[in-house]
Image (tube, rainbow, N blue to C red; front, side, top):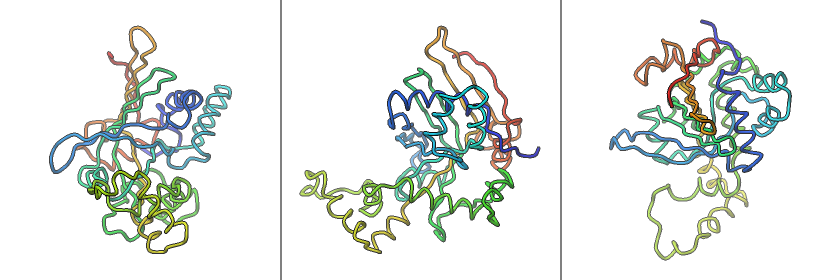
Length: 287
């Protein structure tokens, strides 16, 4: 089956719902929960991550979802399809447990409650962390080459890997404030703080942010190396509409050859099929 770069069928309802949430709640609507299983302890872990749009977005997320809210049905569908893939983006610190976990067990589930429309989305995802070029921790990215030849061709790169590194570079400039960069340069997450400093909530910013703002190359390099772009490829999407009685639940699943059969299935087939509209099936299930 040849990949198409049309948006997957679950993306339109998700963006319509997100548009209403952004209008009502602002940027806080972009936060979702990521659940994983720690590969060492076997214990569940859950944390909040910030949605950074979709891979290959042709416009920023807010403009895209706003057009889907205000435009006609046809124009909305066109705007959503223009952003192409269903590959979701979020960013992280390379030193966090979640990044270590996804290197060993790269599957997880995103849960996103949209209060404005009273809907819950759960997305089973396969995750690909994009480290700084040359980082020895970088997993093999060739599986993402099967998304579509257009992924690289869209910006004239020789390889998909080149474009993914450029995407990371773009997110480094667009998605990191001074405070975020400072957090990437200070001591590792989870490290115990000196009790004498813990009472001062601003001590880290006061110590590390000025180094970045004044062009300290070592601090900038540390922050840059610790910045990770995570690509999350959904292979199952579960939507529950809670504003109706009885609740309405819909599932979209990748075709029979991919990860729709579970995380032990062939990820390359899943990546290829998840980028193709025809590979998704929709079923209505009991809530």
